[in-house]
Length: 220
Image (cartoon, rainbow, N blue to C red; front, side, top):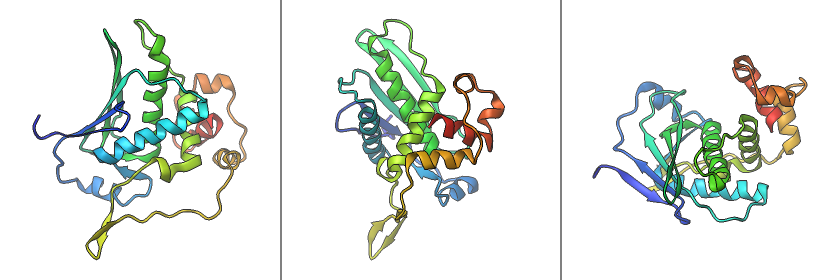
């Protein structure tokens, strides 16, 4: 498609595609001012994905080279709960992955999606026919760990405005950095963490609304 914009990451593992942008709806325009959301742009997304991969492999102590290409396809956002879809396909030379992201997405959901496909790529390196299944608690735990460690370093947002003809984007950094344990405990709000059984087979209620913080904090 000649209207597609694409960008490839420096390692070559990530390729990001985006179609022509459309005027955002009123709801999506409001999301653009919400600090919990980020607008994805192909070139910045490739850098962000590489940083997430570097942070994740650093936590895992994983040094093996990647094998599967990961294609990110950005589509025009329609609302806050747009679907993120991850598909994997086995070819003669190995596995390939595709992640469909809305171009305006919740920051946590974005990191969670990239972490999930990266863990999938690692797990499938020795998989012959059937794709691995990554437990939700592992995806959520690593996503929250990376967000708590360096959210602004792994998520790159495009500039939001101009001053004297130059693009700029304001980033607020808290001078007091909480420890990872303290951040997880804050999500639990004094409640006991979920058991490993609950983390492995959560109910819809444990993943929804305010209780979702308990799952997130427990996984972290």
